[in-house]
Length: 367
Image (cartoon, rainbow, N blue to C red; front, side, top):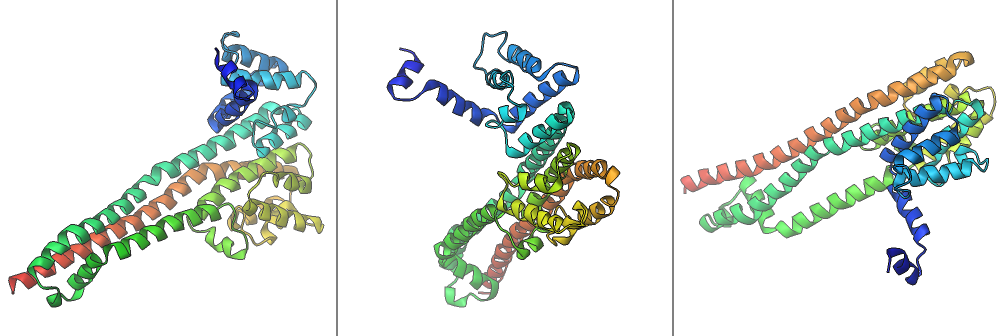
């Protein structure tokens, strides 16, 4: 009995299951591979249908592995394209809304290769920033774990041994504080862990969801500032690509709200509302929202660039590319600052218990 037969007996459609599994597997890295192959083939003159056919042949090893991930997806897209369904609609269930919008814009300009290059650039920038966060976050995490470990070892092992030698009523100053922490280890460590874990969860939840004027201030601080960096570059390049297609700015902003986070939606709709009042450029609207998105300095620059509509699209693209390129450096600088704080915390714990032990030794020597 084959796996398909077993699934059917269990009431599971094997094809639907394969579809869902492949959607899950079609990560950003795999989407970049697909876009890169499609961009190169279209750029050399192949039609979208022919390009997808060739991708299928290569990915499936000439049909030997038809269910290989990229082969499966290329076949799905090609089947739809050959039914005169636009590529942007063919990819709808496979890619995020903003990538689909960039592909939709290329359908109007006929520059699908350029649009795919823009999408790849944005995705690579995001991957680099996320990778930088993951790599750079290791050191602060290690410092926090070491601080808690140091606190636990001294409070549960070291200080109690001294308490057996020197009566607690003779302890004073820093040693007394260390003794109190030792005696109340579980009463202090558990709340510290609870507050720490709860704080991390709350911050992670707030990053894409927290809106309002107070958030504008916190967008200057990590980790909210990192999210602003990530969204800012993507926004600039996406809107640049869609503007080149001739799509009105208000329509672009409305389209970009689809699938966006509450934080980004607030900025898109605020900008759209100001544009709707008439007589305002995109740069003016971004500046006048007061939301400092992508950043206050960038809105000032875009406000100046938008005064010349003939060059604004190009300037918008340049600003977006520079933003993403510098975003990795800015992210590393932010994480480096966090690392300094956590290292200071670790050394603070070390100095505290070290000074407590030194003072205890002095007291014991004079006993």
